[in-house]
Length: 248
View (tube, rainbow, N blue to C red):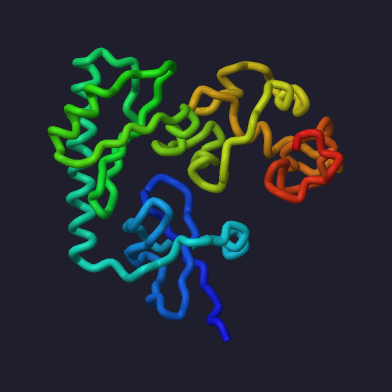
C-alpha cells in the first residue's frame, strides 16, 4: 500500500506566496519555522515551513515539488552568502545599466541555490538589447547570467507591499495568476472611477475589482460578473466554469 503524501507549506522568500511541497514517508518530519531544502521545477531551494490553511493547499497540490531534507547549518550559511551576492549583483547591474543608458528597471536578482546561474528580473516598456550587459555581468561574477523580463504586476508581486485596504497585496498572498481586469468591473460595483483609487501599487487596475465582482447568482467574489453567466463561486478561469460562461 502506498504511503499517503503530506502537503508541507513552505515560503522561499519573506515576500511571496506560500508554496505547497510534497512529503512522503521518506521525507523528514518538519514543523512550523523549520528551514528545509526543497526540490522544485527551478531546482533546489531553501525555504521555511509556515502555517497555512490545509484546504487551500490541497487545491494547489504539488506534482513534482517535494521536501528533500531539513536544512543544515551549512545550507543556511550558503543562503546568507547568496543573499549578499544578490545585493552585490544588484548594485553592479544598476550601475552598468545606467552606464549603458538602457531603458530598463532592475527589480531583483536571484542566485540559484545550486549556484548554477544568476537571474536578473527587470521591467521595460520596449525591447532592450542587453547583450553587452550580460557579457559584463558574466565576466564580473563568473557564472551564467539570465535576464528575465517581467510585467509591472509581477514586479509588485516580487517586491510586495500593502494595498489601500491595509492588507498585504493579494498577488503576494493567494492569487495564483493575473486575470484580466477592466474598468467595467468597477462600474458594475458602483465604485468611484477615480484612477488613483482604482489603481494598485503596480499602477494597474486592482485585482480585487475582479474577484469581488458578484457573479450571475449574486454571490460576491464570483470573479466574472453577470455578463459572463458564470456559476463558479471560485471565479472564472479557476476551473469548474459552466459551458454557458462567455468568459471562458
